[in-house]
Structure formats: structure tokens, C-alpha cells
Length: 187
Image (cartoon, rainbow, N blue to C red):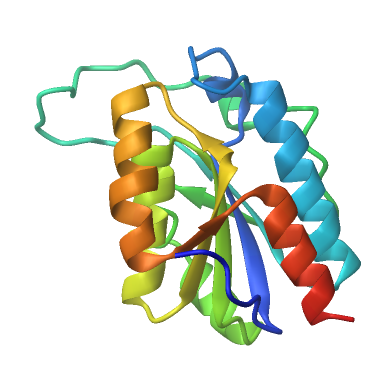
């Protein structure tokens, strides 16, 4: 569904733009994702809206076809990619599950801020982003996804999320469309 509105209390949730993902073979170059994340973050901060930086710390996938023993990630793996613009006002969340809500204080933080809508961006479209979108919707938040500010390692999974999953539970649009709606709603 195209973007119809940006609520007065909307938060930007940035998923897993950390050093450990920067070297993965992503569909969209990480530099392009960072550029769009910076544009959205700057717009949200300009309007006094929350920006949430989420990083993942060694998710335990349990028993699955893709699980495999992995050594613990080095501490610098959780550091945000240096080109990502951050601010002291950003809220930081460390997750140990696929999505940003389970076993974190993210929901309570958003509720304390009076947030009714979230814009979700980051990596990977079909994993951390999708899980966070689903959970946000289940918690009653309006959800928007910036379709050009998410990427994945799998084109098939990326397209499935963008074309099949997100339109059923979120509004979708480009970074510029979201910024335009945000500016328009604050004019």
C-alpha cells in the first residue's frame, strides 16, 4: 500500500547496519543503503522524531536447515558502520533474536515516546527487517517500509518480502517519498 500518512509520533528503526554485515554480498551496495539511512535519520531528527539504531549480537537460530556452529562475533562486529550518521539522541537496541522487539526494551521505549508509527529500514529485508515489521504490526504500530533502504543477500527473498509480505501489513515507499510525506505532515 502506498504511503498515505506519517503520524505525528513516528520513529525510524534502523536494522543491523553494523560492521559485521558490511562485507556480505548484498543486492544493493551497503553504501547506497547507508546514504538513504542517513537521509531518513537526518529528516527524522530535523523534526524531533526518534531514531532507533538496532544491532544484532550473535542470534541463536536454534535447529534449522541453515543453523551451524559459529564462533562468537568479535566485539567490533556490533559497531555501527562508520559512515552511518548517528546522534547522541539516537536510542540504541542490542537484539539477540531476529527481530528488534523480542527480549528488548524497544516496545516500551516507543510507547514512552508516544510513537504510533514506525518506519523500518536496514538489512536483511527477509530476516531482521521482516521480523521487526511483523512484530511492530502485531503490537499495533502503523508500519512503513522504505523499499530502497532495505536489502538482502537473496533476490528471491528480498522480492518476496517487498512484493508479497510488506504490502499486506505495511505501507511502502521510497526514501524520498517518506521524507516528502514527513515534511508535508510537519508544514
